[in-house]
Amino acid sequence: MTNAYQRKKQPERVRQQLLEVAARLSLEQGIGAVTLDAVSQAAGVSKGGLLHHFPNKLALLDGLFDELVARFDRAIEEAMEGDDVERGRFTRAYLTVCFALEAEGKGWQVLTIALLAEPHLKARWRDWVARRADEFAATDSSPNCLLARFAADGVWLADLLESHELEAPTRALLLEELKALSLQ
Image 1 (cartoon, rainbow, N blue to C red):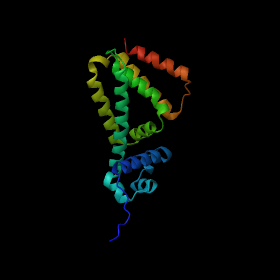
Image 2: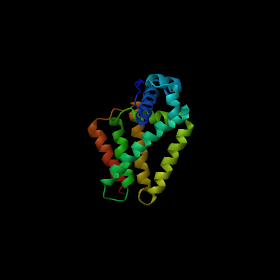
Image 3: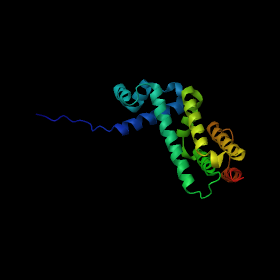
Image 4: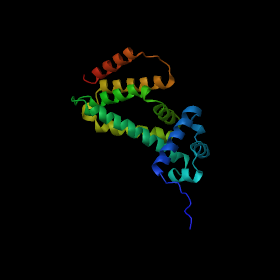
């Protein structure tokens, strides 16, 4: 009896590889380029292997959304842990994370592009925003906190579009000014 070589199955690694390829294709060629065939070929995974993890394109985009939003949430939670002032804590953490997204890389750009292109992802993002707003209504519902978060969204969009060149000192000053708003 011979033992044929069998590749060790690593489902989480394959899943992550598929998400990374989908993100890259979306960024390089647009969300329309993210097809099951294109992702499976670029990832070197059989279509059946891809379908095992993501039964359709919508599931693949949802997986990408879930991963990026989970990272976003973790980063916000970490930023909040280091802030002893309860009033505006979520807003300051949101600002910190949004201002750091440009340095974080292309994954966040992919999320933004997907949010703009896919109605169901827009709805999921609205749900996330509403859930977090409700969660922190007691500490972060002031008009100044809302204004600061809107400004952070604008910086996020400006980074995505590369519409404004913000030098590091200017960026840091804007962040501090917006954080100060959250305390008022």
